[in-house]
Image (cartoon, rainbow, N blue to C red):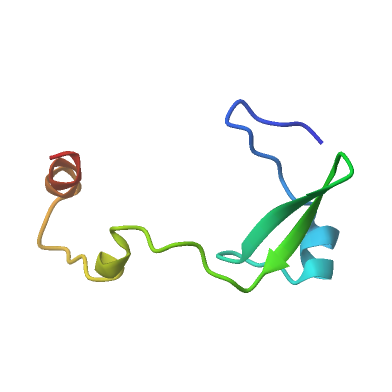
Length: 72
């Protein structure tokens, strides 16, 4: 498995299926005796400060207008 420049790896399909990992699943890495294990967790990560705005965007603003708001 190759690590990208951003530190990302692709979890093989058979592993995702075995662990029940789907898009938006929460996973964690557990360290033990110098080894790390990938585990699926049911605990959501801490809310991001923009999470309350998820799903409320409308087509009334252009992408550039939305990006300008997030940059300010």
